Structure formats: C-alpha cells, structure tokens
Length: 375
Image (cartoon, rainbow, N blue to C red; front, side, top):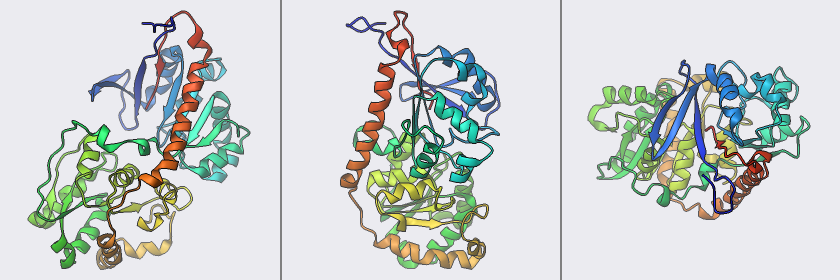
C-alpha cells in the first residue's frame, strides 16, 4: 500500500514480551481493534533474527527493557548478527532500568548497555538518573529523559466508549489495590477508622496480574465480607483507567496506577517498594512536587531497615493512621497545568522518533516494508 506521494504507507505491528510465559512462536489477541502479538522471553532472539530485522524501524519500550538477564532481558543484545547489521534503526520509547548508576557505569552489564546505546539511534528513558548514567557510557547525544508517555493521554478522549462496571455509590469511593503482603494491614487500619468509613465506601479491586492483586481481593473479602466492596476479576488497562476515574480517592502500589490517579485528578497514596534513587514513582511524583503521596515500603533491604518492624499487625495499622487522615484531607486536583510541561517533553520525544523513522534509509526503498513497535 502506498500514499499519494508514492512512498510506502507505514503500518505498525505491536509486539509484547510475555515475561512469565514459556512458549515458542507468537500468540495474538485483538484488543480495542489492535492486534497484539506476544512472544516469550526465551523466543525473543529468534523473533528478532527471523522477523523483526525485516522491518523499517523498531521502537522498543517498557519498564524492564533495560533489565539484565535472566529473562526478561534485552534480547537485542544477545544477537551478534543484529548488532553488526546496519539496520533497521532502533528507538527506545521511555525505557527503564532498575540498575543503579554504579551498576550501569561500572558493572557486569556495562558493556552490554554500551552496545545497546551504540546500536540505537535514540534512547528515551523515563528517569533522569538512568539518563545521566547512560550518558556516561559515551552516547550523550542519543540519550534523553522522557516521562511516561501515558501522561500524555486525554482520559475523556481515550476512555470514550470503554465499558466498565459502574460502581455502587452511596458515599465517596476509595479504590484499594495493593499486593496481599500489604493489604491486610491497610484494610485493618481503614476498618479501625470509623470516621473514614463514614465518609468512604471502600472498593478492593485487582489492578495488576504481575503483582497478583486478586489474592489481596480474596483475602480481604474473606476477612471483612460486606464491610467492603469487591471486584473479583482483572480489567484490561483502559477499562482499569475508566474504573479508577470513578474513584474519589486511591491507594495503589503500581506505577501506572499512580499515573491513572494523576490523570483523573483524584487524591491518592502510593506504596513504593523501590529505593529513593531508582524509584519510578518517586521520579514521577517529583515532577509534580507530590512526593508526600508516597508511603515507603521495605523491599529486599533497599529502604530504611526500621521498616522491618512495621510490616505486620498493630504497628502497620498505626503506620497507616496518619496517611489515611492525609488522604481524607486531600482535595481533588486538576493537574492540567502541571502536565503541560511534561507533555511538551513527551511530544518532543515522539517527534524525535518520528523524524528518525522518516529519515531511515529503508524508508526510501521502493519495496514496501513495515515498521515494528514492540510494546
């Protein structure tokens, strides 16, 4: 298919790595009119060498695209054939790494990451500390900071026509979705606060399959029964955003759950399991001066060891007393003014990718090709 000017009309195919599944070949699913093609971590290099190398350009993104092996890993770096090939060009769409600055600059994976930057035409990353660390590898002109592109969404536009359960509303609604490890202490603190329950109906719902949030829903349902309300199945990402748009407040432990609350303008708290420097949530909320919405959680010793005593029982209930009070006092907000500068950075990021694709030598060939955009 060609455009009126005689140039091939680009068609995007969307691929997504299944970080948990173990299978060969591709699996596909139709979501909101787009075909998503899934591949396992073990099959990534084969997919690259048998299919993706035939595209005009590759746009790669995700929270863990810069993660070291074991899987999920940067499968591009496992292919000498791809590293040595002149094309297709590679653009990184707001990628992230949980590696520290020291691990990136002078660690076991330093040369692999340097190879990634050398092979890429552009590397957009979603935290400034990763940007600064990758620039130390000698590719400063290629690496830029880009806040999560989800922040550019217009919720009213993107959620139009999305079907979602309508929540029973007798009071204001608090949405609660956190891992089972934390949820019981939070629910106990809410149940012990009569003033909070006078003001809010609490809906416990599963946000993330990755964090197995359904286990938390079932645990609280078994303990508290009709005192709370429950959704017992996962929604797709757009439906989850539409669900959260009905909330008057949110407690969540996911990065994109925090973004959904920001876009909806609702008061929120986020449990952060990452250390202060590498935390995606903290780097995100710093852009809006909202770090006070974070409730830090200990994970693998990365945060204050004093948290050890605050994970279970009465201590955790007491720990949540003040955050819940703060949540009740937070007004709904309109972050559109704060989102303006952030969205300008995101627009510049996508403009750079678009210019790079348009300038790709393969786009000037007479043989029609496609460009791939692995999610």
